[in-house]
Image 1 (tube, one colour):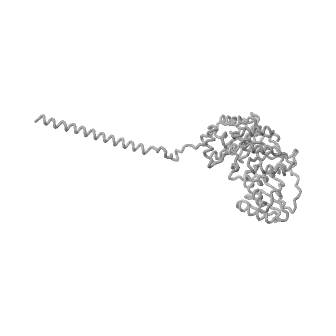
Image 2 (tube, helix red, strand yellow; image 1 turned 90 degrees about the horizontal axis):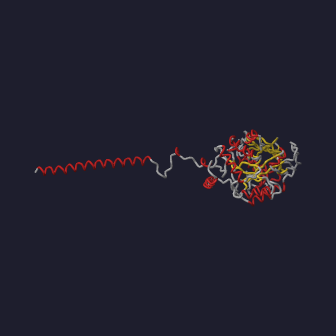
Length: 433
């Protein structure tokens, strides 16, 4: 019997040890399961969006030192929301319009006047600039225009249409008579007179320029954004006056267009991509863009790379650049490099805050600037008015620089203006100034 008792105790001991082992095993399983759940709950899902505080920098922070191929890729991905500034299209590309651009409001009045004439079946040929004066409002430059419109006796339908057009522009725009004379009008914007319009019974002789000039008045016409169409370039080269070609260096036919300019003895500029405000989301200056956040060595190398594509250019003007041309440090690098290579720089003046004049003075460079944009409103009659405005400014001050773009309406306007332009105004090159 004692042996039997010993045999009964041994299995009991084994069972007790096995139960303890199972308990420990379950505890380990529970702990591992809990740890796994804890880790899973504190890690983001693979495809889940990150929290606002952890958002990665947008593409704009990468493009400052990315090669041109990355810029092209970024540009293609934004085609639904932005326009590629390096490609000419039938629809006008957006200018870098400033929200408080007073001169843009002045141009909207120009268009209101033209629309008033068109509603009466009349054309802009009845309108003549007597004088154009440079004035300032709120620190911004604009052109005050003294106009004569030869409508004869039928002025009241035009006045009614003009008043309606100005009312549609908003309460900032006003029309009043001078000394209660319905043929003597003044238009103001925000209380600032911008247009004086005289409606004579018959066309009066054109007055002599108020400021006589030693030399004949000169007008430079620069056409930007070239390099995508040889037919457009040939059409410009066939004009009976010489326009200056400004070619985007990364456009697909930049080399061919530059060669044509040289063959035709036309002035050739490199249209230098420069960083605009809102780059690249609201405005994209395309591949080869000079950026404010580039260090001086990278900035200068990017400029040199652009110039290497068209090394024979006479000078440079900025493509966009409303941000870059405000930065004195960046523009000092740019202008000093151009000075060393004997190239001039024309300030397209895409922002009233441009520092190019001050930097040019510091470096001892001649300052050139744009006075008139021809085709902010890409309609032929509006462009013809801007050409007349440029003529009048040249006659008053001795010089005007106008910039246009290869839009169909601009080409047609230039061809039409060639038949009617004031021949006392000499069309010249920047180099001739």
